[in-house]
Length: 418
Image 1: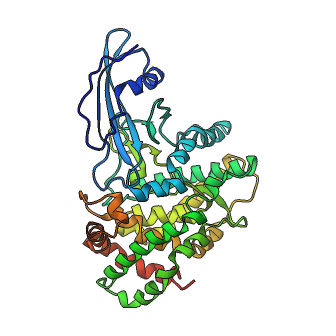
Image 2: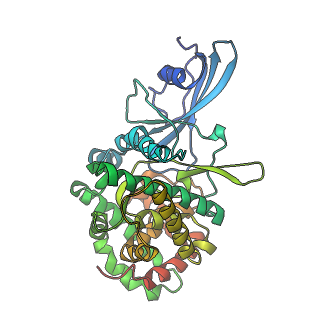
Image 3: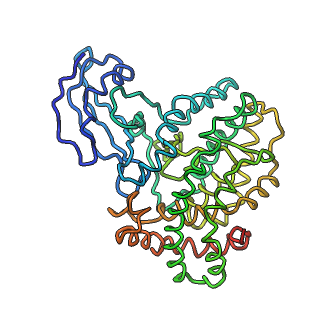
């Protein structure tokens, strides 16, 4: 049936084409007994500093059912930024096309691999097609009504939540390895991802901008004399080293890395006593087939509590490894799983992922909420961009983490010359 809703004023970042009528087919699919839309409102779905890669909207809808009752439903709509550097990036690697394929094909495929082994698991939210959309988009169920929510990113995850996340990550990795072992390689967009030669100049420009701002801030860190010269020597080679690490070595144990596995990209539900019931992963925009070191460094350095970050690092690696081997066994993985020693050797060999995490996503995780936290300022060399990156790298919380992490990376050989 047609909608009864009247147009309502939209938030400033909501395109004009995002209207109630677009949701009619989705509502017919997802709401039992749907009759018509009574009201529709689109609001910002995340606060400043909580999401950089996309514009996130929450669509709140009041519907009338066939029995005359009314029901409130909501969806999450992800849209691309419209700034030039983002458009250029999308030309080289359309992250919305990748994520849409992940939700529609890869995520269900990995869930089915577990189902075939007698295990029920849901990795992500349900995705919907939106007929008539005027740009790239991802439309997802809103997990909040089911009790899922993010943790406080600046505090970091405690051991219980970290181990829950690692367990789910190991399930994801195991299924992805099983998929390739039994069905063959993933397509190029997942094996190469962002690391295409045509994107190298743009990535180099971004890396150089971040490195310049980071190095100017390191001079204020206590104990910087132990490593600052090594960091200066790294600066011209960062992009080349990233491309080197991104090249798939088929002699390694490889998995489909989530690629952006930090605390805001996982949502937890809890029971009345505060115990974790479930975890759901979100943001499958930059998956990458390769070594597990990418996801493990990215998550453990960016998203755990400072007091656990290094002291429990080896414990978390063993916890992940035990869970990975258990899941590979459950799935009847036809090859020999990696040993714990081999996993640690991989982490040492690819330790530069740790440096990239600490100087990249970890800075965004630890900064206080601020209106200047935006995709444009993260990449721009404007006055506003420089001021924001200075805030990222000099705020007391980040500095405290880095004054522990940089010596740790130095002692692991992760910032040696390449």
